[in-house]
Image 1 (cartoon, rainbow, N blue to C red):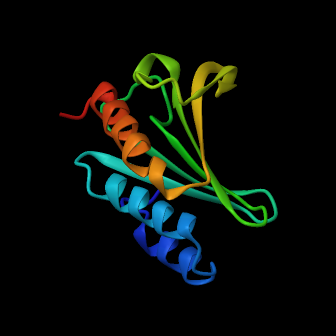
Image 2: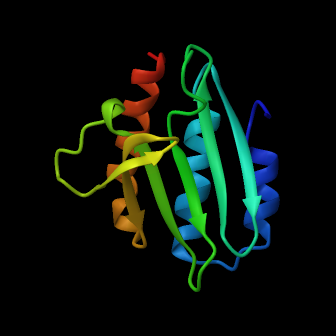
Length: 134
């Protein structure tokens, strides 16, 4: 694990054509990079996904509090997932994924439009707080 996803994310993003989801991914990566006590793992599976997985140092039983996946499709889009018990979904925009996040129930938000950024970012910060952040 690296302490900041930015070097890996920067290299990945540099090769990505300038699409709206590129900026959303970079902004979400910058958000997690700036959170205290957070480390990130960047998992590249070309042809499938590129995944940023933040974890808070206070987490004892889970390897992450979110998973920010770039789905390697044309055009690329984001799937941002959280454990069900770590976030709320007041607007009902997430898809429940039973057992789909490391064997636990989760919510995934498919993002193909930049207008969902603020909502997903709010869920990201909520998950961070539940993981032990303040």
